[in-house]
Amino acid sequence: MLFSQLAVYLQKLDETSSRNTITELLADLFRRASADEIGKLCYLLQGRVAPLYEETEFGMADKFMIRAIALAYGADQSVVLKTFKEHGDLGKTASALHTGKTEKLEVTDAYIQLRAIAETNGTGSQEKKIQLLADMLKRVDATAACYIVRIPLDKLRLGFSEMTILDSLSWMLAGDKSLRSRLEDAYNVRPDIGYISETVKKEGIAGLSHVRARVGSPVLAELCQRLPNAAEMIKKMGNVAVEPKYDGVRVQIHVIRARNGGVKISTYSRNLEPTTDMFPELSEIGKEVDAREAILDCEAVGLDPVTGKISSFQETSTRKRKHDIDEARKSVPLRFFVFDILYKDGKDFLSTPLSERRSILEHTVKPGRLLSISPQIVTDKADELRRYHDEQLRVGLEGVVVKKWNSLYEPGRRGYSWVKFKEEEGKDGKLTDTIDAVVMGYYLGEGKRTGFGIGALLVGVRKGEQFETVTKIGTGVTDALWKTLQKQLHAIEVRGVPKEYDAVHKTLIPDVWTRPLIVVELAGDDLTKSPTHGAGYAVRFPRLVRIRKDKRPADATTVSELTRMFENQMSHTKK
Ligand code: ATP
Image 1 (cartoon, rainbow, N blue to C red):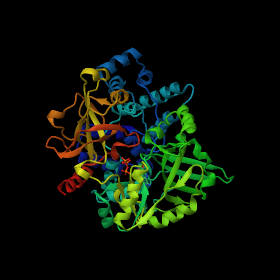
Image 2: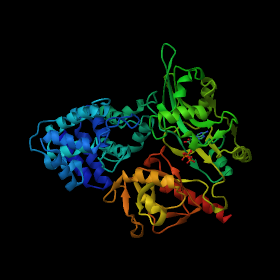
Image 3: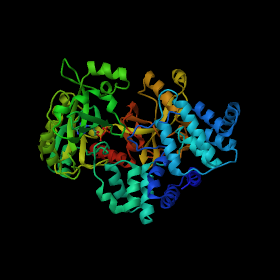
Image 4: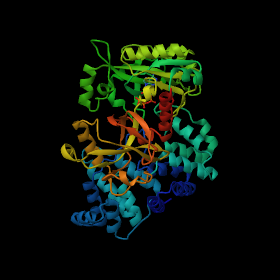
């Protein structure tokens, strides 16, 4: 397939916001692609050249793109800049300055070149990138040039994620969405849209039965549901393991032992980001893991070397740059509480009951300086569960995670196999859990906050791939946080309403719209029914707790979760 043929689809996708049209257009594109092309296409549609968990950054700034366009079309940089000012978009600028001459550029070649651009670094790399881009621009037509430019600038905003791609793969195979959940199950085990699409293109849906966890490819983390109290948990889940809920960071550790005995470690966050560089101490866990290869699911917390006390999430997550990491390693050593094992020595344990996984875990992890096995009790009694929970609150932890003892590991699912128990949910009609919402836009500030350019945020929760407003929020934000938000939000401002936002009530229209990329955690007094907010509920007295960098918009709280939180709250208020 030629890149110019793909560009025709990209243009149509750009112009529609109907989810059904997008799904059908993609299915049509996938039918026309060969088995070798489909995976690459799927990455490109996401503006990427690799799966989400591989770090590939284009690192291409506007000024370099201006030079690439100038070089490709023999134009003066001042002309490119002037055209850019007129269009406000470098993609359209390239289309406008296109000379009319084209050669043929295959999608596969475009992918290889774009990948080379992402992988080129070091001295002289910007020059090489400019040259590679100019070469590509010369070979495509005006429409295709627009998209060749947008991809490395991270400006390809087609308004859908991997979930819509999965719908479209189902559509390609079956002519409807009936295979979506099987595709999603496989994606949750191997969240690599290129690999999944290639597998089904080659082998049909049956090909997914071979999909297994493997080291080096993160498995999507199992997540917790909510239930109002201990009695409900026992009633719904039966025999359960109850573990302290540590407030740290979720880390999936992948261990590979080399023949010479050395270990290679890679780690991933719960939103699939590679985090290996954040945890250099893990290179020393060789003695603590009795396996050739293993995937461990853990929560990392800071442990005060003097008091032995567990420190907060904020301290654990200060590890951003190399310097921070070195400093943090000295002052707050980390401890990894391992609570699950997903894979060991060629065997995938996702379909093994938790009771057996726990025993495999106890035979694999040899607790030492870095790893601990999460403590737990196993019970089918509500009062015992409540007592254990209260003990955790007394020692300063958040609560407990309650896990159905015979449940399988459910990657990426928020089901009733794992339930979080902080305080009794909805006690006194209060909202005891926080909400993870996506920033949809902001209102300009008044008074003191004018300095930050932001007075309040408009935030929303998820409904499928769309976002529905749930509250405006202006309190609980420190000056430092406003500053961080201002910087991050400016980078993702857009002129029109993003496709992912359903109709926003006229009283809520923000001064500035932003792309749905930043997740914030909110606390509130309670939920009330709301005729204005798209979610159907509003948060009373919302406060911003923190930016959740470890969450993707796809991890935001959903409208159905809010409904459950509201019902839990009501069941308590009535008592
Ligand atoms: P919260 O917002 O309450 O911190 P969350 O939204 O990050 O939770 P949940 O699904 O609500 O995610 O809770 C599960 C999280 O709890 C896990 O992702 C993990 O980081 C943390 N956790 C701490 N201790 C455990 C444990 N023993 N077992 C599983 N998860 C644990």
